Length: 374
Image 1 (tube, rainbow, N blue to C red):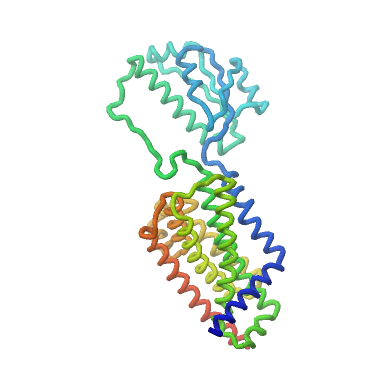
Image 2: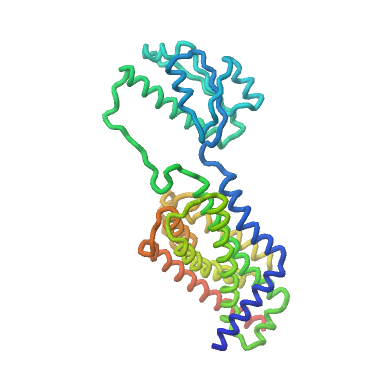
């Protein structure tokens, strides 16, 4: 009981130190408020509110049907412009896409002469231009095919393929990117806070004062783990409720309590990783380099940026040793698919075991470094 009280009061001392560190507090607030919003809304992987114009020289039922096939939220309402003015309008920055339908287009389609449609794209907006070109090609091809089948120019397909997107029917990138951004901030901040606290104790000479007290290395590590984990867990819970759900309108299919439980397990692993890196580094600069070399690849291979299944087979086996992969998998299952504990318990077990292994290794290295310094 006395040992637990020491760990508790040592953890409170850690929180008081963090409260006086205005730079770290500012980083904490930024990471769980503006940063997830900017990451979720700043990078578009789909066409959204793109400006589009039609130069219709055919003025036929088919050309009018093509213009009517573009509508919000992917595209702005279609604007009809004078034929031949498309290049000038794009130079003025008024439209991202301009579609020019030549005269006699429907007549040529009926005569099966394969006429051409000109699509002009402002490629300075690279993301929207590249994705929008595929959108426009599919939409025009679908409408022309539908017209040709109605005019008995083509036989209807034997199989009509209807696509349904599971778990994210509208393919909302904000919902997916927001959760991934929150998970990334949790891992970055937890590792940085815990490791920086350990490095700061060493650089300020207070680690010797702690070791002079009746404290074991485990007590010091445990205090830093629970204090930093509680701070990040509270910040993540507030960010999830007020930023992601409240401001961005992201819905959670599963249990928020189960998601926070998985977050707590992941925080245990991340804090242990921070202590491990802090025992390897001899200065804050070395610690920062280790964080970049280890935490960044862990995030990239977690399955948030690219699916784990698309990675090489040998790399997929290696990612089983990354706690970020198991946390990302469990979080996506809970948030997007509504999974329960009976689905995600293996991921929770993996995170606990990896955290225990990291903590054990960190304590061994910490005792060794203390023995060398003394």
